Image (cartoon, rainbow, N blue to C red; front, side, top):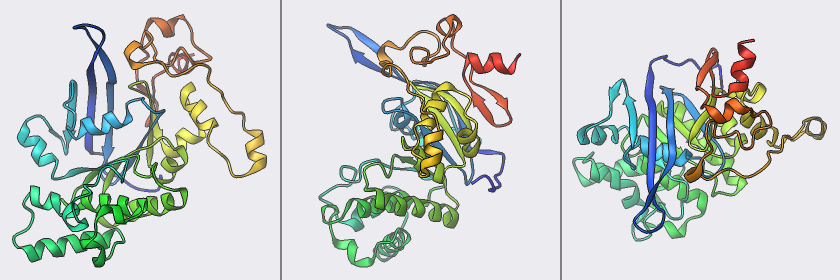
Length: 332
């Protein structure tokens, strides 16, 4: 993946993004759930940034907040260098940025035909002049994702999971976007279908010049499609680097544990690899530990980790980490 050449100007830039939710905590009391806490990154045009982490770490919330499906608590989102802030900005942004949802069973309206599901964004943004033009665009989108014209008058429940996800992808392509948030788009599919859908994402990227934020918890899937990978833990980014660099040389203890758990097809290599088993469970974001959020499970945790949050900074060109241990090693 690293052979690709990218324009260094970011297409999308996220700065200090925060998304807090008020949770009921007894009678007339609320508590802040910090689903996303001070997250910053950028994505270049034509690039795929993989976002990985355990269930509940805030990956999906990042994607939805970027598209303003959730209103950000704080932080800034720039698209093509322009700050997305007003309702007009968001409306224009949504013509160029869309989302493929995780569950192809619940994200499609069962009462609408495939043609109407795919055509809905065309209707919302008034992207056609005549009914014939609308139909032509829908059939073209269906062709892009491997569906034929006979499917247009059928309903979502008549299709398999893989075909439903293709319908969802066609719907996301309807506004001719530059940027797509892919929210665990293959996690609900059979393994045999996952590869087909992932390869389709790659082909569409090459054909249409798309840029992806690809959210997943399966590291093998993420490695296959991503140019760079960001690792998230308890609402914060802990590491970000080129895909090959993160796999071959993970710096953060959490990234090291995640990658040690990736299955290896070669039995000899698998036996030689040492699996890092983390102790304890991921803490609740409602009662996050002080300092570094990973310290309660980290084998290298020290008093400093409890006292202060490590800074997310660049240690090698393009390789960002938030860890006091890494900081000490690089500053010896």
